[in-house]
Amino acid sequence: MRFPRTLKIWKMGIVNYKDALHLQEKLVSARKASKIPDTLLSLQHPPTYTLGKRRTDHNLLIPESDLEKLGAELHYTERGGDITFHGPNQSILYPIISLRDVGFGARKYVEKLELTMIEMACLYGVKARAGEKGETGVWVGDRKIGAIGVRISNGITSHGLAFNVDPDLRYFKHIVPCGIADKDVTSLRKESVEVLPSEEVMEEQLISCFVKLFGYCKTQVEKNPTIELDFGDEI
Image (cartoon, rainbow, N blue to C red):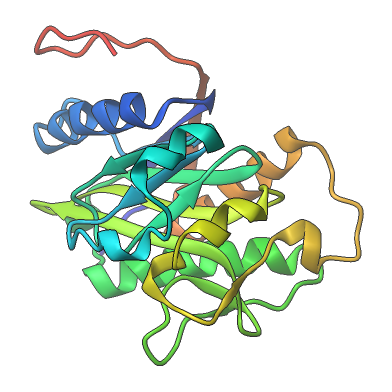
């Protein structure tokens, strides 16, 4: 029998992608060593394009040298998935959790991430669905509203999901989002007829969807935490 566990939630605001990547690496190591509980990073990034481990550079449609003019960065990662964009007003969750402890395989884990975004969209009257026929992420019709790219190392997850609340969609015109051509990208702002509440409220709603679907019974919330891990590094 599996018992619900405690989830530590870090609300971090806007974080540089490289810093967030470094933080995830440290937390994964700590979680593998059972030095920390399951941890969820909730944050946003400044304008950033990221490529997965397949290194599909051809899906970046402008020269890398032009990114500076857009005020954007490019980062290569070891997550799954293709190229995507992260930016302000896009809600990101990076779960650092033990799949062995929760009893999930990789496929079920991804399905739970999809459902997290589907339920979030439903709160605002938007009918979203999981990708099908080679699609990845979460969609509203044939428009993508949420991306998923994960890494699993020895049963510990990193990277995660990105849900488009109200990002500047023009940034997506410079890539083939997630490697899927001839599809549009959308946002909750664009799809919902409801007035969206504050950023803080929506962050809490997305976290709540995650907590419910993953079966956590207790949460501990920290804002902009600074924690010294046992192996000597401060993060």
